[in-house]
Amino acid sequence: MASYVYLIQNGDLFNIGFTNNLERTRIDLRPGELVAFLITEKPEPLIKNLRKTYIDNRLPGSDYYRLANSQVKECRSLLDGDGSNNYFQPFLKGPSLFIFFMLSWFTLTYIIIDFAVDPILSRFS
Image 1 (cartoon, rainbow, N blue to C red):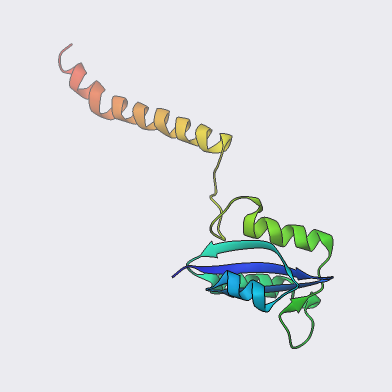
Image 2 (cartoon, rainbow, N blue to C red; image 1 turned 120 degrees about the vertical axis):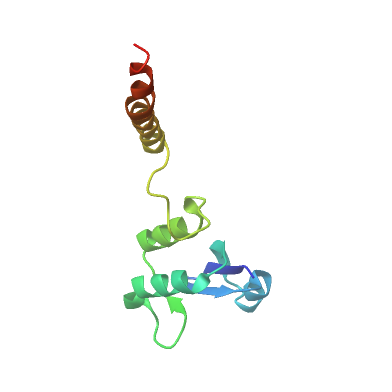
């Protein structure tokens, strides 16, 4: 079942958590405003990493954090800024993926021609 990892702002404090019912959590944390969220099948590793990252900004005994603007942007981009649905991002994307694909294609083609096609054609000459 999919869960939501969320970042909710209430004044200058931010709540980082996860839930199965985002609408219910929004009602429970009113007047907080939903800043970002991510739908995921396994929220525990992401939540653990976020809480570990911002441990120095945590208010003792709560899920609230006092984050700087740069930290809010960082957390927001992790949850929804890149349009990602997973914590782990692909190693190659965009132009580097295209270049890698083309180089792999040409290398594989060369190997097939050199080791499979050339020996067969050399028998007929």
